[in-house]
Amino acid sequence: MNNLTRGAISAVDARGMLGDVLDQPGQIEDALWRADSARLPRDEAAGGLVVAGMGGSAIGGDLAAAIVGDRARAPIRTVRDYRLPSWLGPDTLVLCASYSGSTEETLSAYGAAGELGCRRAAATTGGELGERARADGVPVIGVPSGMLPRAAVQYMTAAALECATACGASPPLRPELEAAADLLRGLAEEWGPDAPDQSQAKGLAARLHRAVPVVYGAGRTAAVARRWKAQFNENPSIQAFASELPEADHNEVCGYASAESPFAAVFLDDPGLDPRLRRRIDLTADVLQAGAAAVERVTARGEAPAERVLSLVLLGDLVSIYLSTLLGVDPSPMEAIDRLKALLGANVEAPESAQGEPI
Image (cartoon, rainbow, N blue to C red; front, side, top):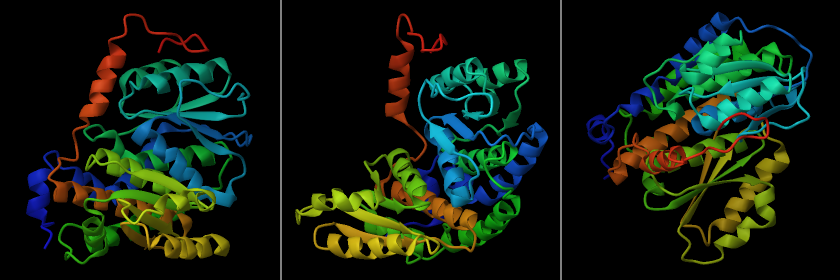
């Protein structure tokens, strides 16, 4: 039997990341208060929202766009780069999201947004981004320190949604977010560390143990698949991949032809998806049964899009912590990322971005 008791998890989870995951409902409520405190200017010019960020700070933009979905009144997109598209202008709001406030790509994008004449906002704990934004009179949505960036997912998602409303890219969705917080409280108990081994999160972790997960999303769950993939990479430190239907049906399904495949296919379903996409999930899962190490289908919970998207986020985060426990891996350290950052910082002379912003 898999040992996924609270004590076993604590023995591996030295920094207590499980507590941050279980606190996601509280994050949503606190984030809304912090967005109010930032006094975001309301300008519904509907030029769209761009979220500039990397890693766990950027995923909020993807999740916000998924929650808004076809209710969007203007584009909502995430840019993970030093540069911004040259066609952005004064009608576009750029939210620069960096938990630490020192992410070099995001700092470069902040400068680029200013040069392009875009309206700006920042979501951060402080750092250089916070200092520059405050000096420039740019609204700052403060995020509490003490977490790893990826653990602040609900803060970044709520910040992006509030910015989308402020710039007219989305209708107000605050009641939907508040309902999601209520739902997540119940799910945190249902899937949490005191739940039995056969509970959904623990059972899924056990079945994915020693496999290479490939997480498939469709429609609004594609963004959640990216989140699951990143959490599997960083928490249990395993390789994992994210893909999207229907595109995967035109190529990737051929990769399971070998009966020795180590890949486990995980499909993220949503009752609100286009029926054609849900049918594709059914049929693709059937096709992969013969070659995949495992085939799992997970269905979102809740009524409104925010509830369904964020329920899947919570589930994936918990599964990643449980996988860490099964593998005996502390979910907090990121040695490979730290080494890479050290190498980047060791450059004798840093190049400059297209906008002249030092990287």
